[in-house]
Image (cartoon, rainbow, N blue to C red; front, top):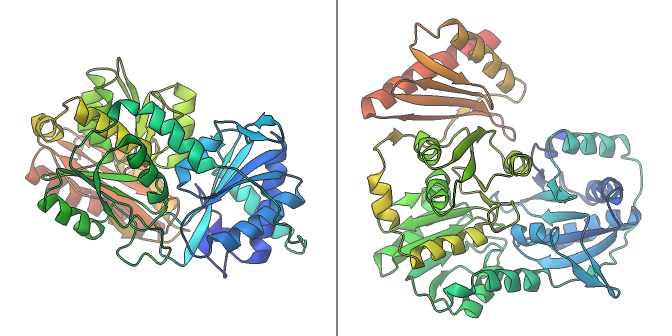
Length: 459
């Protein structure tokens, strides 16, 4: 059972790992934790076919823990996060939830589902999730009755009204955009927002369908952007794509696919003295560019890690290369791809030329993420072995610096190489960047040799 309790969320195959008994127990023991902060929790779910069934089981567990469940129905994940920062009228009084649970499989295959959890406005992750898993396992004989009572709230309506007001200055703006929701949950929020703001758009796959009949809802994979790219060839100037639960974005022009780190750099330019947090995979272009106008902070990969660091530092923004963007500037500090789209539209209306500004940046060469297969039992040991090897050969390899915030980011005078252990899968994640193609090939070759040596040392 323990493998479904991941670093950032709970995730497994519906009906197998996520069965009625286990999910009810998750709800019960999670409810006990939420109860320490208040009586109310909001539950919502994504477009997957089995999400309503999981909702019934989860709500049963929460009810057994004497949590009053506020149910928001099918919405994208950012709507669930939004509920944790806003009050709802319940029984004649205004209530702000003490916890929130979004039932979602995000960008995973259709048979998967899971839970993204917030308690007291902060992500519930890491050791807290692992301990929850251990408690569920220790109490596997406990029976939880089916009790699905919940108070319906209009979470989606509150979110749409909030964003429509926040971006009312965009009313009627025609940027010639195409939007691909991938049959995930994002469309149920984006469609009413476009209507309220009278923004025209070419709509692709807005209808929620948990079988994902058109393409997989993962905009970080090029093959899933082909339909959007066709729209860019046929009249649209800009394209937006969303993952299955609407917390990750891809933004494309006719010429470029702007990754999360480059978007963060451009967003920072709209802020006064910006403080921005990036993950270890972010381009040096982002860090150097932001340091010229404010302060850039390098931190661990993972949406939960970045939300915690954002709260700790009071930074304006955080970003992952994959398209998780967290605005603390004028917003609540969680990853919301829908809100991010409207911040981009705002910049377009103000005349920001994304293509031109991108072409002004120094030319760097980089790889996408490259995954190296290993095992869960060895991946962290390989990183530790790699650190020892690097520290013993700093001069020989002409290494300028070694950053160990999350794995190892090795800084050379002409670029860098990253190796980190995935927190959710049995792989090492690598990425490389350099100021020339030759340098990129050299750094990648050097790092691959060191990885092989570290794997051999671990056995």
